[in-house]
Length: 68
Image (cartoon, rainbow, N blue to C red; front, side, top):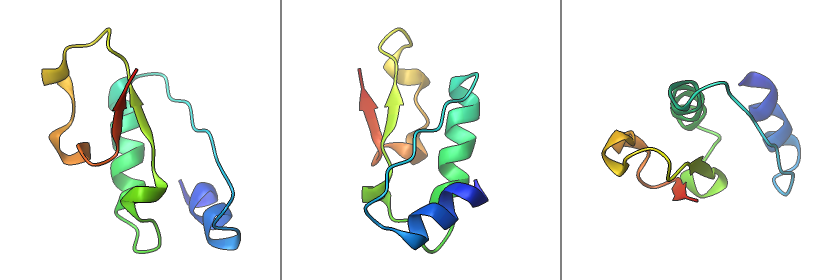
């Protein structure tokens, strides 16, 4: 997570793709990334699979979740 934060601090136009082995791991990573003062919700795009029920989404990430 720190590497992503530092990349975004150095160049706010940079894009970083982070892949995780599970939805829970993606939620944890996203939550921790948003917990830093330097990362804003509009900088984060959390993709969520439609293969999972909408009710399974983490409500804390509702501002950054995109269903595909």
